[in-house]
Image (cartoon, rainbow over all chains, first blue to last red; front, side):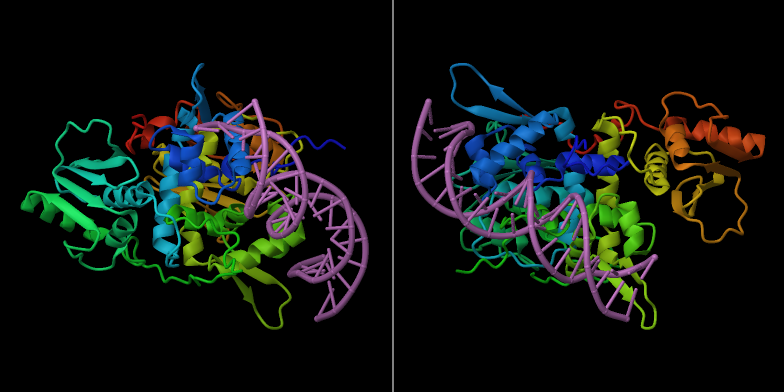
Length: 239
Length: 239
DNA sequence: CTGGATCCATGATGATACTG
DNA sequence: CAGTATCATCATGGATCCAG
């Protein structure tokens, strides 16, 4: 007669409890898109193409109630900036493992009409460089895509870091300027890249550009490359 | 007109693609419960308390179509044994991170009527011992709960392993016999444990039992205790 | 008994339009 | 900019039934 938690699994299992918080549709994508920093409602609507405002509102309220997301509302300002709480930011390892799994096992080619967001592509690249321990010393690459923020992907030789380019004062080793689709084509191309791909402009010292091109050869991973001995039984089937 | 992938997110992002495969309700719980080995439909119905046969069937078919689960149907045998494919087994890191996140951040106390399955509790224990690098040398503990399989939790000093006890020939250092609820109470109790808890019987050499009790002191983790391990992954999220 | 299928109710999500 | 309102659709839950 009591139905206190209709959406709960009711399992004595912290994994099930975790899924009660982040298992709803769109929930982890909200966390993904807030991982690089706070965003407004409409920023999220843009990143998460296809979500309806009703669903996004519902997700944000749920995540807020669960303590993963917090809104910053300042009086006298229309915008609401949503940011991750520490608990939300702590989902990073989960997102990383899911993304790595997707890179390993999702064979489906992207559809031509899929909206491309540089931060998604760049996060995949950053994570792979980190996981593969690609070491090219201390580098700083800036990616500039018209219509979005600039991004800086950098490494100190040990850790790879991706962030929105706030302090443009630091001089990058390489600056990549590209349209969204050109960036996606360039980074996800198989095999060696043509330095002069259409829609891409790469600026910097010749040696730094060579380092950049060499480093990103690891991306995207071949299905067998990221973790050996995976006889892929994946039927890329649509249903 | 055409709506080829109605449940797809349509994002150019492998993380979103991954969620299209494992983001449906119950999907990751199916994977969780197949992680220790193949199970029949009714075994899964038992482990995943609360799922309806219709939903479980749907999940199994979807996971099968996506190449994560495969059914073993042998002619002349009634049972269907569902097992993970390599791609499904490769979700282990995702499940682990989700479980760790749940142990860190889900404060809700279990409800008294939640069905308890030893393998869920023991998986949490095994994962924590592994993550915390608890080293008590070469040990082999058997957990015996009436009404379920026996489980063996063992370590070679480096790696912790949990499996269903198939080869009962190997002699355990410690044998824990308990009811489901007593096991859950005992393992998830805060602070030092009483060796003579009601419903629990611990057998073995006194030294081995002391080792066991000492090792499991790390469980369950305090919210702050587990955090330090993987904060190497880009701690700064603010811009 | 296992491994489902069927019917129905309901809640979650999607599409579209509109508002403070 | 940040949502609401309304309506339609789909996925899930509850209960029951059925075939090998």
